Image 1 (tube, one colour):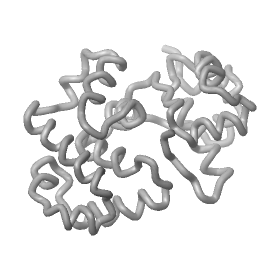
Image 2 (cartoon, rainbow, N blue to C red):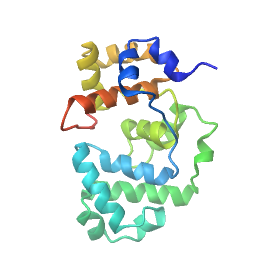
Image 3 (cartoon, rainbow, N blue to C red):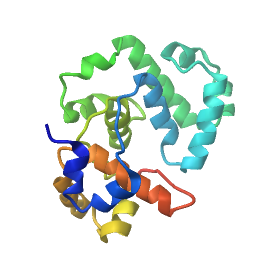
Length: 199
C-alpha cells in the first residue's frame, strides 16, 4: 500500500512534508457540527471565525435540535450574521428531515456529495468541499475556491489562475486533500493574520 506522505514526497511538496511532518486527515466525529463550523468560517478571517465559534459553542447546543431551538437573538449575539443564522437553521432542518448520518454518504462520489450539499441554502461549493475534507475525510479533494489555498499556491509556485492550480494539483492525486493541508500549513506559517475565505 502506497503511503500518502511517501507519495507526496515524490512531488514538489516534498519540502513541505519535511518541514511540517506527516499531517493527517481524519473524518469529523460530528458531521453536523463540522457543517456549522464551515458556515461560520465563510467569508471571514480565521481569527474572527475562531471567536464566533467559541461564542456560539458556549451559547448553543450544536445539534440540529439545539440550533432550531435557539432564539435568533442568541445566534446573532454569538456573532452570526442574519444570513448565517438562516444557513445554520437550513442545515439543521435538513439534518432532521433527512435523518442525515455520515454513513449515507459512504457510497456517494465526491461530486454527488457536493451536488447534495449545495442544494441546501447557504452551502456552496467551498463549504461542500470543506465538508468533504474535514467532515467526511475524503482523500482527494482540492478546494481551489479557498483564498488561502490560492494565495499559498501563488506564493509557492507562482501560479496565478485557478486552471493552473488545478493542473498542478493533479500531480498530488489521489491525495489532494492531504496536499491541501500542507498548502494551508505553509500559508498559516507565512502569514500572521490568515484569511480562509471563498471568493
